[in-house]
Length: 258
Image (cartoon, rainbow, N blue to C red; front, side, top):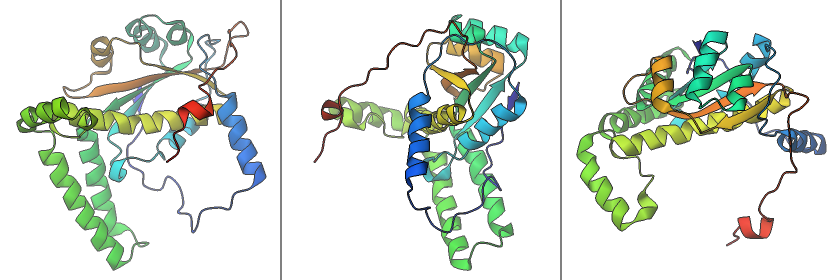
């Protein structure tokens, strides 16, 4: 069982500008996006570590609120750990037959870790101008204040009142519940990136929300306040895997244009 680092240092070189759109790039993305399917029956053959690590490195490039990256990804590959994790995932076939499981764990403490790493990197980065360094230091200070105050139980009565009166405020990042929801949403950005990265790498995947969070938390040794946003099964589809025609809502009903 391993966890990938949350630091984004040296993951990718900066881009001078957004690359121009090309037909080949768009076609490649369409192929990756449309070939991704939720596969629930894998062949259970081991995956090369290099393939899984490549997927994880792309997942770590996912966006997050203020680049806070409030999550870690547990990479489960040991057969005994996989067996126990599959049981915690209610013995779903996707979990039982997967070659690896990725568990996306979110918590504000990971955002604090990210903030400390980023703050340390500011002084040693030769690429930042004094103005950029001053801006990021100011942002770090604001983020530290948010992470110190937002999880407080003192917000709970106000949070409950506001969400009862105005349901649209349900995802407000205030109080223990609100801040955990905020962290989990950010983890899902990384999970979606991992799904597409797996497809691009020639792997199959299945996102799973059906699991026993208490059993899985005990298995992973998680701390109080950590939440499991998603479990992602990785592998290669079994030849007998059933893939039915994909159905989605029509564009006209799913997209509201204002």
